[in-house]
Length: 495
Ligand code: GDP
Image 1: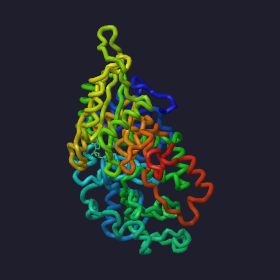
Image 2: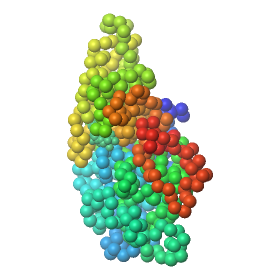
Image 3: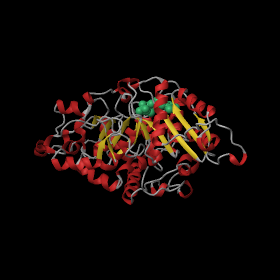
């Protein structure tokens, strides 16, 4: 659990300690923005005043550069002309959606951090507008939009794939862009960068623009007007590899494990229709309980095990970390009247399948909980299979991420971005079920996460040219900020 002070729901302020701006929003158009603070159990970290300042600065920049403004028109005109760029007042990141909802939220959040670090503006490619990713959320910035207009000049944004010609690594290979600082300086030819560059920081290493995380390359990319960002990862930990970013990140997030926690609460506000689902469910099933426990179970194909084995793992984890109420060894004689415990626990299950709900519910039906505690077990949906892009499906997924985030305690599945987002939003360190690599039930059922931060499951593995940032000092410095993830040893996370 977070050791820093916790604000209880009763004294939580609706603008989350200055994270959100009061100005420029119509309350009715986005109820979650003003109501979510009443539902979170923990708010362990207040935003630094520097972060607040940078967010207000970002909001002003976004307003100035957003679609519909003269500066946006100027930048897209430049792009349309295909000419190399002259320095522009507004520089952009176009975020491209990839993979499931949790992946999307984390890659967008990372892209936003990168925008804070580089003075850019983030626009979201959401081709089907209201029916799509952007339709799940409210606009996060006041009096403007983050949705990329459909007439954006780069064609087929949804079908660029892993490695289009315009990918940074391909441009480097074809010498259409130079990342050698000496050469770039010698020519000092600003015209030598293309108007847009596609950067792939997604999990597939073969196509990953790993040099993206190097200072020299950042120096070159800083001159490119438009960057198209393709990722399914939480790549914030890797941004700490760039020394200049690291200095700024420390100021933004004095508590390193607060980055995703604060920015998820800043950026993501479920739309009124999703918020309706969240609040209806919460008040019907969860609100009356004295304790709420969220259990998120993800069965990955690469680590699948039998339902009973997974159920056994959940119980073993729960016992180890004291999460779910234990059952009484006795005959479970019903307690009545004054004997009835005042404590009630609501267990919220999130899973694509109903099996775990059935088993856990039966457990407390067939046995009394120790101490006579009353237990409710609930699962809002069981969709059976992932159907990202189908609005009704995505709405349920988002609603469940938020319902989990209101928990007092969480059990999540390792390597699941769905679970990562829930924990970060909740502001708590979950008991994380370890993946069954090789389809073998892990000996240790779960571990307590070292921080509420998501794992960057596939950090880049390239060494930077020009000695940076892998000089000895840099490495030591980096090691102070990140460690191997509990659930994926090759991943890294902030702590
Ligand atoms: P990850 O694959 O676990 O990293 O999480 P993602 O969110 O990126 O992708 C999984 C997708 O499967 C989700 O976005 C949902 O569409 C669906 N899904 C997985 N688990 C659940 C669940 O517990 N509830 C609901 N409603 N959908 C789920």
